[in-house]
Image (cartoon, rainbow, N blue to C red):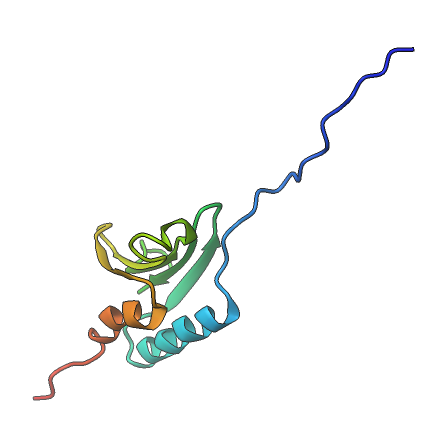
Length: 113
């Protein structure tokens, strides 16, 4: 009798990175302010293998104005959170989500004439 050993079955779906409830609460708080100001109109959330991405749109059919990314592999280096502009330039990166999002809150403040 021929005995063969087979490797253990592996999970078919690779693990993905997601935003936690508290992180989404902070992001959605800023999103609500920007929608009320008429700056943003739509958003999309992506859970990828190495990053979670919250994309912000001015109109539904456009490229995102900003991407808020969470990359846990960068946690010990530059910080796992970053805000990326429309042109791909990183506007702010850090370890604390609230401090990283301040770069977008500044756009909400306007001079009153």
